[in-house]
Image 1 (cartoon, rainbow, N blue to C red):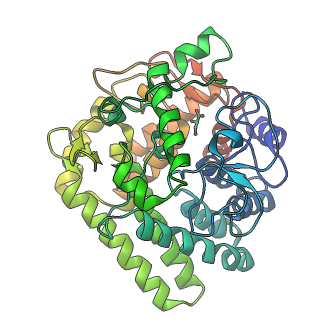
Image 2 (tube, rainbow, N blue to C red; image 1 turned 45 degrees about the vertical axis):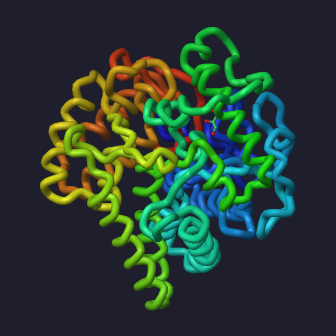
Amino acid sequence: MHGRESAVSVLDANRRDGYTIPSATLYPFQWNWDSAFVAVGLAHADPAAAKREIRTLLDARWENGMVPQIAFWSDAAGYFPGPEEWRVGADRTAHADVETSGITQPPMVALAAEYVYEMTGDESFRDSVLPDLKAHCEWWLRERSDDGELVWVRHPWATGMDDSPAWVGPLERFDPGDVSYVRKDRKDDDLAEQRPTDWDYDRYVALVRQGRELDWDEARLRKESPFVVEDVLTNALFARACGSVAALSADAGDDAAAERWRAQAETTRRALSERRFDDDLGLFVSHDLVADEPLPVRSVAGLLPTLAGAPTDDQFERMRETLADFFAYEYAAPSYVGPEMDYDRYWRGPVWLNTNWLLERGLRRMGAEREADRIRADSRRLLDREGFREYFNPETGSGRGSDRFSWSAALSLTWAG
Ligand code: DGY
């Protein structure tokens, strides 16, 4: 059994000073969306730690409003690329002197902050995080949007779904050149089969080095980066983040801010529905801004605009047919379904519990209770079977990636009982 006590003990063991590392074996720093999922789970077990988790993450935000993908609060061995590779410097952050990576991650932090506030009702927490969440949403619009509707990212790591088959096209179009570096993520042969390939990694590293050379100047990177993508998951969470900022602002009595962010959530929601739905595939797809073409793959990301209520009724009818393909496995929902599917490799097929958590919420929002119940039941079966693994083979259920993985432990607390 992998009950509440063992989940809490994994989170306690992975806790550092005010934040939780995703995994002691693979990811020894603070990660952006990992911390957000951890806070959601901690809200059920240790609300003070949940609030600190979010506060510490926002303490790493840049002056310009970006919340970085990684905050290097303390030295740790065993991870590449560390601060010496990113070379961002500690002078970019608004609140703390901390080195960070030079990219962001999907803006799950706002939804997590709203969730923690709903669970605790702590107004001082609300008032402490709201200015940072607004600054973050402003940053997306100012630095990362061509049209004020949809937002873009410039690294596969920023999408959270590093080796999604959606990124193969854009990555194929550039030559990473002669990148030399030493990977630290493949501790044994099994992990080598479960992690992104060297082909992917060469391009990840080349993009980091380009960002560093252009001093993380967003305007230049928008023009020069070979990878500029309107990621469908990032946009779903951005719309949802604007909705969270609106709700928290309304709760704090700031009607003008509430109105503004409600309108932005609606603008992004509508743009997703009108421009990013692929009727043939029956889900939402990301868009490559360099080639100006859609990236038509069936990734679980394409089901997550449900979170923001993006699909019209007709679109959701079509999505139900697609859902059947994601449900055609022993354990739903695989991260990707299609010709590149690999049951064991990272975001190419395995089931991840964070996307299951988001998908369950999205489906409930659309009124698809039966489908949402299936996602919850399969998540619990995986946890019972294998414990707090990072991801799972959708056919056998076998745990993959690291063990004692923080967001798996944290989200299990939301499914307990
Ligand atoms: C990694 O290093 O594998 C992470 O996914 C980057 O965020």
